[in-house]
Length: 237
Image (tube, rainbow, N blue to C red):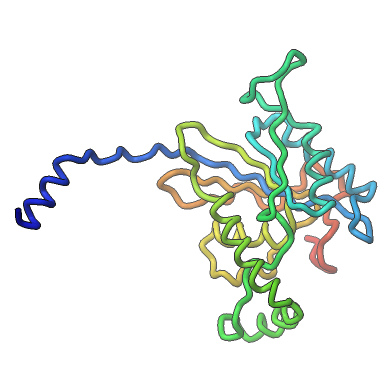
């Protein structure tokens, strides 16, 4: 039997797998609420921010809530989840159940990408490289690895026929990294993208379409006195 005939026989005996159905993912991103000075938990203002974030999303049927392992993110997620319910779960006798809440290292606080000097405009290199200079070898290995995992876990359409809504309570750097990726910007452009505490960013990943940034740092659920916390000096709009 010739190679061509063998190939034809194999092809004839196999059935091509049908393409997998894909559905839209709606990713809700929020930076943790304001932390105490020692970062052991949330301040009183932070607890208010977290509860108001949950109320803001209370009408959204979330499928899951993820948070980073640090206390300020975990506490924000727990307080926000108190205001969440889902119509997608099987609820109990008292009504619909809340979405599952889960800690993931990929939702944590890390530097997602370390640019080389020649990647950056001169002024950006002068501003950002000193900030990154003290990172350890472990940081330089672990951060990009977790950033790749975050892109795999949180971005892109989802398998199946039902849209999925996910909330990630995380930190400033990861929000910048995911927004940068959604906009198709260069890897180093996560630098300088800052998020206030408990502000809401929403990205839609629809099959066959580019990612769409629907909201960025929306704080309409917060009263004026709770807005813009956690931002660099002079960054308030």
